[in-house]
Image (tube, rainbow, N blue to C red; front, side):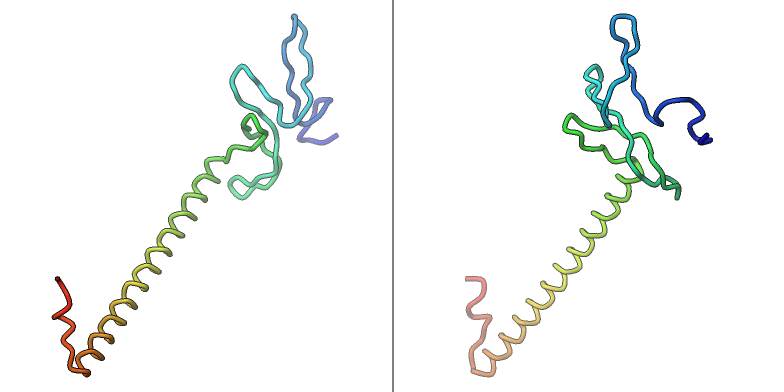
Length: 119
């Protein structure tokens, strides 16, 4: 037998007490209305160990992310935000360079751009 599952049955089973008798619940995930959560298995990696793990699910069967996945998502979002900030700084610097070039062209034409600013 499989050393991970020494007992008979499936690797993941949920039983509900109904009229004094435990009844096996079908499905993966299994919805538990008493707590407003589903529980089920899915492939995942935890501390470099990839296998099936137990996860919580919402009413629509969407798996809630593990703490590790939430951390990875937060790091990704922070990295994307840093990238957006860098791009915004680059655009601002380009706009300033374009403005300086335009001012220089106007001055060559004998027009003082300062005369048109702050009106």
